[in-house]
Image 1 (cartoon, rainbow, N blue to C red):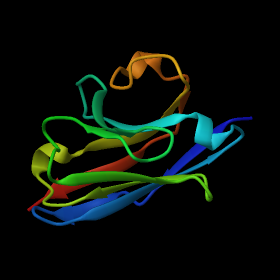
Image 2 (cartoon, rainbow, N blue to C red; image 1 turned 90 degrees about the vertical axis):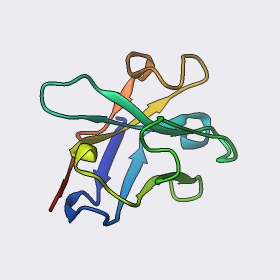
Image 3 (cartoon, one colour; image 1 turned 30 degrees about the horizontal axis):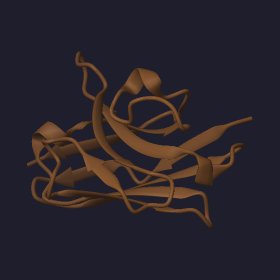
Length: 124
């Protein structure tokens, strides 16, 4: 059974930082590209960041470039998202997702495996 379990969400003030983590089990982690998406109320699920198999190549949504950093630890089956300089528009449920060798890395519908999500709220 494939499981992706996010943690680290919470409430933070504008300009603050949060670290999200996603623990993965039930699949061969090193064979999957990993990503974070987010969904705000009433909006579509948007691409945030992704990292390829070895961790060398990373991709970011335009709204988070320079503020967020994705990383992975293939020895621990973990993927992390460091979020700095948080803004109110970053408020959303953040989801971890896993994608095999095929599929567009920035497209949510391509991902077969998802976590349950963790809430991030940024306010003054």
